Length: 120
Length: 106
Image 1 (tube, rainbow over the protein chains, first blue to last red):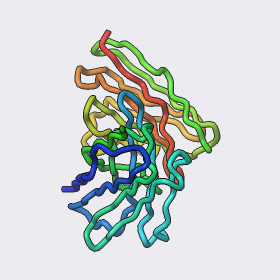
Image 2 (tube, each protein chain N blue to C red; image 1 turned 180 degrees about the vertical axis):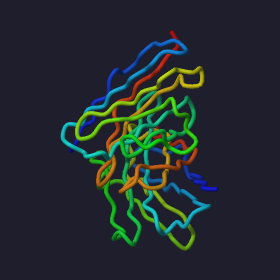
Image 3 (tube, rainbow over the protein chains, first blue to last red; image 1 turned 60 degrees about the vertical axis):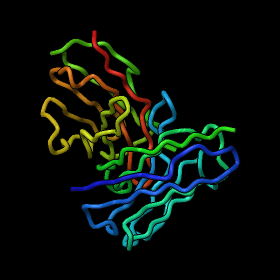
Image 4 (spheres, helix red, strand yellow; image 1 turned 90 degrees about the vertical axis):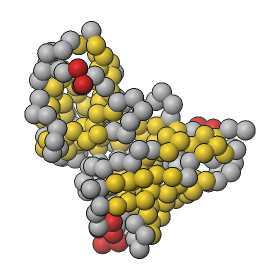
């Protein structure tokens, strides 16, 4: 059974950093791209970015709103994808979801989400 | 960047109604379009991928169509568990969501 579990969310001050983790199980992690999405309170879904699998070059793409501040990485040996959030703003407050794929395949499996609150 | 315009933003319907939701792309996206259902406090659930392929386990009352710039999600006979928010998503090389459609009980 495919499972994705996010962790690492919490309350953080503006300008600070946070790293989210997405622990995967039930599939061969290194074969798939991994994506991150977010949803601000009461708002729609927003794509954050994805990281291709190494067989597709291992490159990342990001939404314009987070380019230069957020970085996606992966540890295929541990089946974990990471989202590094730097220079956080209050507008980054959201539930953050990881999902499998998003590159050549529409994201199919999603985690339950982790809440990031940016506030002083 | 490709923009996805989803309409309507909300609708009221009764159980048994036929419901259609539309997404328009600002330029052609072949069939790189998926539809998701989201209920409050839950992660999105994929219903349709590649414009018209039904996700395994999703009831056949859900269907998708379209190619290029115009896409539709149809629920042939709305059921109580279908009241939710629906999103289209353009994928492949860059990802963009439509703004969502909230389907409410009439």
